[in-house]
Image (cartoon, rainbow, N blue to C red; front, side, top):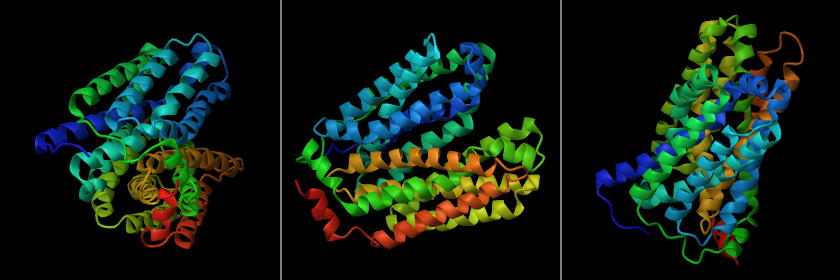
Length: 399
């Protein structure tokens, strides 16, 4: 699929993918940290400003499958470069939005290339290092996203607080331009899948097991988001943590994600389905631990770290499983995972909001997370084989 690269060239190419992941991760999560600044700057309520977050998630859900299908015949290396260019431009548009309406448009446009970038990036990374190290390549790219939670998100929030919320989006736009340049220079030519065309991509979507895993991701990963969406009040009100320590708690969560994604990459190169199973079981265990001990500040910090770590087995394993269930359209399969994860974000945040409507119920967020994670595990167990079957391959290849 691509020319043989030296170890140094492979490292640089994977670094360019990680930089792209870091850029996307920074702006995806930083909007929550500058929401009050946006509301104040545009003279709207925080609830109204929150529509910008919803618009981004909607863009991911719509853009991931539709762009993957429409660009099936495009060079993977050219496509990933243009996706980052669009992402950069959309963030600059967001920065200069004069009102909430145009900001929402800008955030929706920024969300469109998000899932496809990681979907195509998974294919490009695999082409760079070989299929035997697919998990490693994907962990490097997604590692950029997790590192963003440790470094990029706090820095972006600081920029928004000191220089105004527009500075955060300008910085991400500049970072996106840098990532686009790195992708242009360092990524080798990677052709599309042989025989790839929109019709082939659509045929892959007729596989019922693909949608079973999609549903498992959309529900099961919501368990992590039920906690993460409300981690600030869970810590401050539920466990009595000083509000000044919340950034440290968030950084600890991001550190757990970073450790987890690289451990998951090693396991995924051995067995994708086992990685998914381990992810569901350990994430459930971490949430149970949080439910039992999270009312105490010290154990809350430990539990949040564990949830961040274990959830990345799910994120990486589910993406690999969706790719395996659409072997003729791996970019689409990987992109669908990010659509599902954004649905999980909305699902977990919505149900979590219902849970905390009652006073003194923040610990119940962890138990809601357990329920959602177990439901996802049941779906994967019932509707997918240990490894993709011949039926899955035949379904995907039908045109």
